[in-house]
Image 1 (cartoon, rainbow, N blue to C red):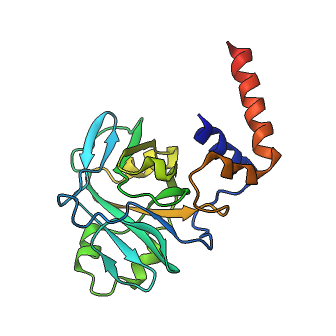
Image 2: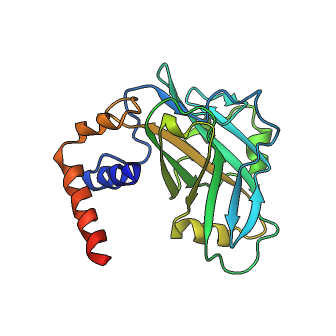
Length: 219
């Protein structure tokens, strides 16, 4: 519950925004190259049907491909990740969708965004120069977001897609698609302790109190 309240507070205070990298290094989905089958069993659930990724990868800001799907920053080098999906079995209106991803090592508190892209798996697979694709991974609509902390390491993170995500999936029925991803460290540091959230000031506390009052009142 505390993570949910903090996340809502961050949104309300304007401290969470996509693709705005904090100065601190930090990453999610770390050190997985030798730990996973290929492809990793990450998946979309669309209308209760499971679509497992066909491949995955990452692109570092200098423009080279990574063999796993780490995302974030190390020594000032930013990395975005991606997941490929074959939507050949998708039919009919998309009424619900979620993204499910193994976190592996999360070494900082941050927000992970996923994006609709216009890229195709074939483009990434055939690319000898992925530099133009680095920004393309995060230039589309945000279609999902989740707060991750080191406590979430080695778990399955699952979060719902936005209505934009539902629409994007439906418009790509039958296609191979690429979902881009970007992990942004929050600006108050990488400590997983709840006490770190005191740096947000009284705004979050007030919001949490308001939410609690609404919950109690509804009961």
